[in-house]
Image 1 (cartoon, rainbow, N blue to C red):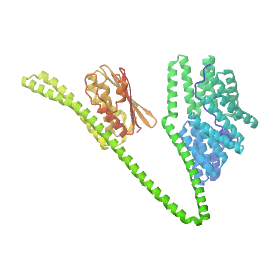
Image 2 (cartoon, helix red, strand yellow; image 1 turned 90 degrees about the vertical axis):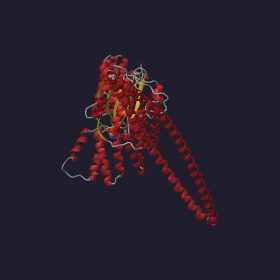
Image 3 (cartoon, rainbow, N blue to C red; image 1 turned 120 degrees about the vertical axis):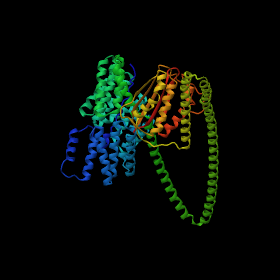
Image 4 (cartoon, one colour; image 1 turned 90 degrees about the horizontal axis):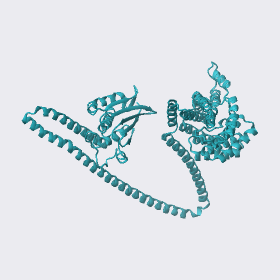
Length: 632
């Protein structure tokens, strides 16, 4: 049997930290809401307790977030650090369910700092567990193991057996997803043993379900189905739908391996329905991937394509480089603050020891003073030497940069002198022909010369515009007045400029931009950017080709692409597209000239507008220029 491919969730037994409350008590939540919205006056302390209780008992991510934030605000007002820590813990749980892992990590680290300040061991161990959970969901398995083992060590010392079982369960889940199945089975069984002793049904379900997942990955489908059914029956009774959605995806895998595609499809659709109803981004992602695979196997390529696209959208919204970077930054900030606290404590101890030593060695005061001044002089000398060394390094760095700038200047002047010469020589030749045709009164030829003159002057004007704008960017003087810009309006204006050029080569111009889509940028510079990109696309596209401009929302950015069916580029040309070190400039498909300065200017303009630009190309197949700009 094939190994299970879908990435599944991990179970956080967070509720063990709050009096062994496991199931979502809908009646209790509804009754508390009725009290909160009633006419009777409620004290702030009681209201705070209600907020924390609702945010604990509800399994709806948005509701958990709402009441967690209300608890945080009221805790600040009451100056209640313990409730504030609990509020951050609830908010972290909500963001984790929503798939917003960076926000979850941020909130839980705040909770951990407060629990450490209060020296609340149970809160500290729970925070370790949740932070490990977040790293696990982000597939950072070494960091997850580190925090779960910290939680296990602390809960073992304070004899918190229910929390200890949750730690074992989560550590087993980490090893399962890491591919270390022997360790996974070992820790799941340790968790199940404690849950059985404590008669904790929710924990039993989680442990049994996770054991089933391991058997599924090993290809033991009968055992996997047995354990997953046992876990699902308990969770159905308790009303916990999150793990049920995950198990449905695994059941789909099992039946797919057994050859029962219809039943596998039913399980996958049920998983997706639960995930959509509960707002579970990760499970929507996993269920969509499974449905895409099943429909593909059934040769229903339309549905396979639709669910594949949905999978990609949710995958990218959860896993992106920005989240990875922010999570790493938060982890670093926390660990640095911990190290700093240790350093401060060590320094305080040393200070106390120094005072005691001075008191006991008063007879050696004179020697101590002499030693102090000697140390101070040495320190001052070392500091002066360090400053001189740093200054020398800075001078060397500036000299290297100046050399680089001079080399860039020489290359730049070489490109410009070469490309200015072509249109000027062309104009010089045309003027000689013009004199000849005027002298011979050859009016037919004069009309053709006007087309050549217009083309040469246009090329020269475009080159000079790019040269001026590039020089302004290097001086930091290019006008920059960002505002909300209608993308359709700018693109339509650019296409109007190149209508004649595209018609001359019988090139189709097409756009796919949603109405009302706007960017936040300097309109003039964006107009120059698009003119250069579209000009290049037309220049390097053969007759009867196609140039297409597309745009779409991408989070806080707008993604814009200009694609053509032209000659394309090889790897060396693509590598040097936005650089000034090219040795040879390629002509267009109709002999059009270019300096390459346009794409260099595009890079400067995109940086000015706080965006990104990149290119993809295949020789003989065409080129795609992709840009990202802030959303208006």
